[in-house]
Image (tube, rainbow, N blue to C red; front, side, top):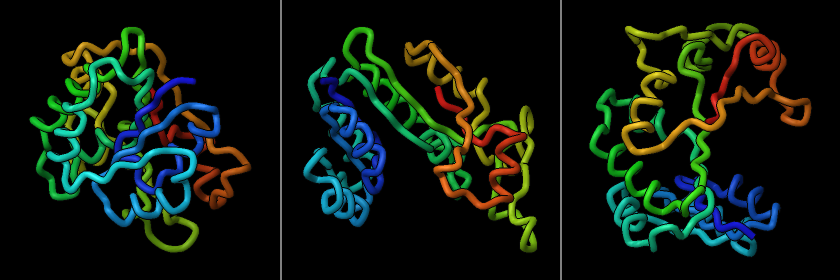
Length: 196
């Protein structure tokens, strides 16, 4: 019975999972093809909104009624905003986003975030030959590759926006995920994701 926002919902996979738990879910994304895919596959269980670009997405958030969501879920957003592939952090955008999300949550509502682990980030793109396609990119205070925000950086941003950390987990890959053996072996030793 909860109302949930899946921010940057992509193809709607997680929105559909949340709807399957009997939540009323709204997903928003800037990718028109992904929203079309989400509507085609999951439009019967969730509502999907296409925003032409990140600013339109933020405008949409700011136009919604305050306190209108019980929970907000987002995945890889801090990674993309704080450590974008082009190397230009979007500091203004993240502040505006967190302010908008905080306003949309009802009193006692929760923001759930899944982000790559910023200390032992696993990168396939830096890997080499078959069997060694993954590499750990350990970074902390002086990031070289700037691959994922560390927890201290994440907490500074969330704290400035008025959020508090209620829970911090490292989800594991299950047998149901059909992961490659090299990925499963790595994931059993090092955390791949942070769930806040």
